[in-house]
Length: 197
Image 1 (cartoon, rainbow, N blue to C red):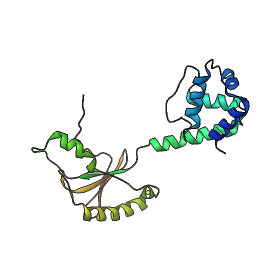
Image 2: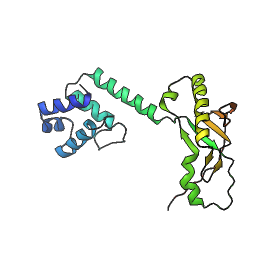
Image 3: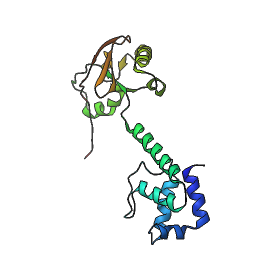
Image 4: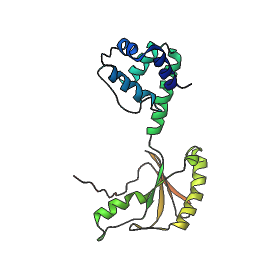
């Protein structure tokens, strides 16, 4: 049984009004809204900032679980696991930048901004789970196949190299044939951005 289901079950047994008062809520509707946010979220609403002048989201979950008689070890472990998952989800994932050595002539800025995302390739999750050494081998095959199908990016031109941003300070450069030709700790490229103000 999930923590969300257990919270719902215990509240239905003890009564919403009583629990709301024990947690310091004078308006039951506010309490019910907070409980719904927590129990309907796969992340217990820990992925959103929340403070209702009583508790932060984590404080609310702990106080609610404690009041409902849910074992502390259980709810703390669930919160810890969700926090770890959210941290993992928020980390920047490796990606490819497709280098074309583009030089702007008369292309409209809005068009460049609209097509900017085509210069980036996401990496398959299965590859990301591998060690770096195994990733590089698989990426080489991926590059060959991609470049065979898409040697030219619309508007941006012919792909000259694939720049793999493994993390903030580890960058690998591959040729269009999938050969690793270099690595460096920094790599700068121009970006086209369009915003409406």
